[in-house]
Amino acid sequence: MKKILFLMMGLPLFYSCSTNSVTGRKQLALFPEETLQQQAVTEYKSFLSQSKVLSTSANKDAEMVKRVGNRISKAITDYYTQKGLASELNGYQWEFNLVDNKEVNAWCMPGGKVVVYTGLLPITQNEAALAVVLGHEITHAVAHHGNERISQVALAQGLEIAGNIFTSNNQKANSIFNSVFAPTAQIGVLLPNSRKQEYEADHFGLNFAAMAGYNPREAVPFWQRMSVAGGSNKPPEFLATHPSDENRIAKLQSYMDEALSYYKPVGPNK
Image (cartoon, rainbow, N blue to C red):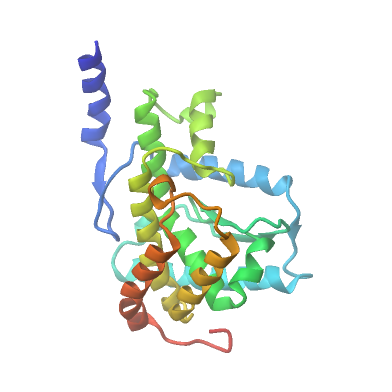
């Protein structure tokens, strides 16, 4: 029985591995991107309806988040178009919102649904550092990291994948989606792969921030500030989904020359 189950679970893996057109890495993707984008719209609207969203017309920080986000999304769109990959962003309807929440967090759902929490801004301190964060979070979406993780979890749990399982009151499917994409998501499995995704998001997010005209050098002091803000109550790297601060900073420094090759300052907020 175990052998039969293994073979059945292996079939989606065989037919659904693809090479990411930007990162060049093979990924498992059992779900159509359109399906995840549709579910993301539903969850995003639900989250915003239960949160204090700050208006761009009345709050300068909210306006800044939208400005930085729009610049990065344009840079990404231009980059994909120049590479002949514009179809990769089909269905993206970018939204950038600032939510009044003391948590130090930001995230991006499939389709470009982005939220920044006010608790992050005292640590970013400037637009370039905010651009580094948004570049990182947006890369998770455009690099299909969420699809990869939800596919891995669905496969591990033996979820039958047919049609849009998220719209058929499938509690198991919706629970898996929320475990990956919800603002409070904390996946406690497949950690080495999660760290690989983090490094990819750092790498290409740094490039995208630079393409948008923001100084990528701001990434290092930002993560140094994050390290201080996090204090000593952190799990060791092998138990965490994110790389250690020291390893992350070292990797960012190794990416810096490439990012600087894309950097062309634009305007006063660079």
